[in-house]
Amino acid sequence: MSGRAVAVVALLVVGAISSPARAAAPTTAVRTVSPVGGSGQLQAGYTVIRRLGHATCQTGSFMTGVADRCSTPRTHHSVLDPCWPTATAETLVCQAKPWRHKVVQVHASGPVSDRPGNHQQSLPWGMRLGGKVHCLLDPGSVRRLNGHQLLFHCTHHRDVFGPLRHATSHWKAHVYDSHARTRSGYRSLGWHAVRVAWYGAQVTPPPSPSPSPSPILTDTASPTPSP
Image 1: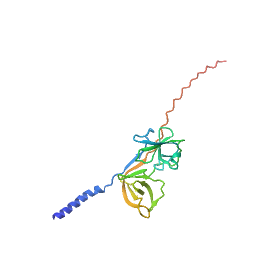
Image 2: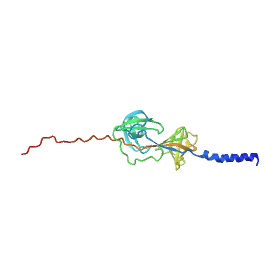
Image 3: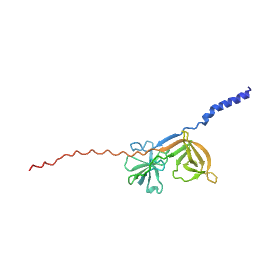
Image 4: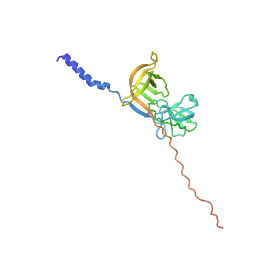
């Protein structure tokens, strides 16, 4: 065999060995997020950046399903979602993005109203694609492209249309450039690996205060004399 043929065989062998490693997709890290701990306290690393009063809150977060959502006169028509109750009665903290540890504290003007059908949102609250692109769920979107619904708005002018491929531990999302000069305004960028997927943690009701011990009643009245 000539030297050139040997070199070609060697390159083919090296390619066969290295190609599986290059093709291996990263495992998606699935994380559950809550700014409030089990005792109703603000978790370490979270910062309250704003405090609002006169909030109206109810169960059934649009973003996570299992948390609450609130609105206040100062937020006008926007909704703070999701929100978690704290140990202080009628006080909740709301987190806008799962990858940011800054929260808004609200004080509800009444008890959190219960909405039937409160359950875990099937889609992630947020995702990270690669090292820089972050995507936030848009649960109310009605926009469709090629028969698929818009699911996430992302940074760097990216959007994700469904469905997600998450049957294995290597999740993928179909990403589009949302500033494309096309008739639809979108250009497919293909399937991208989802590095991190965030879900909201189950709401933990604030601990009830320990009831005061019942006083021991004793009869201190004078006995009635016998007739």
